[in-house]
Length: 138
Image 1 (cartoon, rainbow, N blue to C red):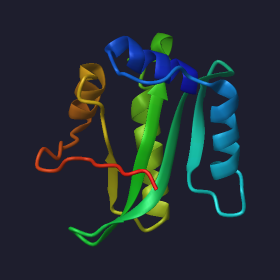
Image 2 (image 1 turned 90 degrees about the vertical axis):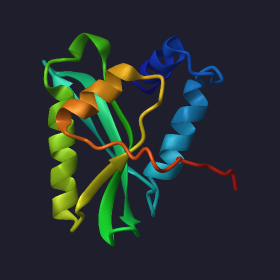
Image 3 (image 1 turned 180 degrees about the vertical axis):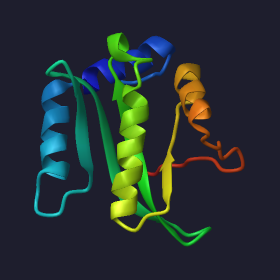
Image 4 (image 1 turned 45 degrees about the vertical axis):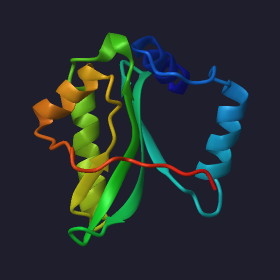
């Protein structure tokens, strides 16, 4: 499904290198299935098939001194969208947060993905237009 997600973003116009299954699997195993995993994940299923996934980790929002669940990926396969699966995954992520003394869900959404922005808007999410998400390779 990660490859499906990457292809979806490329179709929207994201500039990225071609998806490498072997390298991606190696990174998932290295960072998620080790002594100190950097992320947790779950898979949404329908009719016995994997139809979506969420990848997340825990953090701290210093502006409001709140524990947070940071969603790094949330994806539902195209044929299963608009059937409530994304909403169920958000509900599950909120429960994960409550179970871990977090008060906040946070994530990024690609600026050129209006479908995702509309989905989150309908959930009542608030965009943080006063901040820019930055990254730095280390």
